[in-house]
Image (cartoon, rainbow, N blue to C red):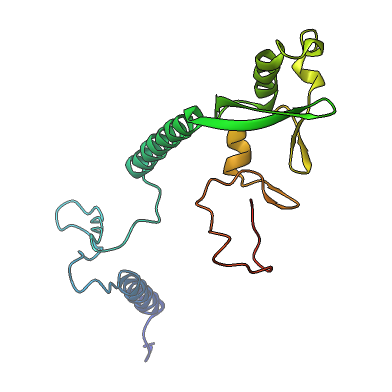
Length: 198
C-alpha cells in the first residue's frame, strides 16, 4: 500500500523547519536597530558560534545615569562652595559695628560701644556692664543675665547675635531693627504711606 500524502516523519521535519524559521524571524525583529547601520547585528560569529556584543551609541545623552566621577566632581564643588560660604560668613561676622545704647535706671544714659557683628546679645550686655560699671555701682555685682536688650519694641534674647538679626532682616513694629542703607532725605519727600526706619 502506498500513501499519497507525506509521511509522519516528513510532516515533523516540516514543522521543525517552520518553527526554526519563525524563531529566526523573531530574533531578526528583536535585533532590529534604528542606529543607521552603525551597530553590529546580533548574530553568531562564523568561527566561534558566540553571539556578538552590541556596540554602544556614543551620541546618546547619559547625563541621567549614575556616574561616580561626575558625582565626585559635584561633591568636591559643593565642598569648595561650602568652604567659601563659611569663610565669607566668618569675615562678615568679624566686621565691626558701633552700637549706641542707653542704660535706663529711671533716666536714660546714652553711650556707644564698638563690637563685631558676630557678638551675641549676652556678650554685648556683659561688655556694656563692664563699660558702665564704674559709673553705676549697682552694676558691679550684677551679671549680664539680669540685663535686657530692648531694641525699639522688642526684647531680644541673649543667644542671638547681631549678625543673625542683620542677616534675617529682623523687624519690629515700627520697621527694621537694623538698617544700614542710605536714608532718604525726609525734607524732599514727605509721604505718609512710605515706611521710615529712622
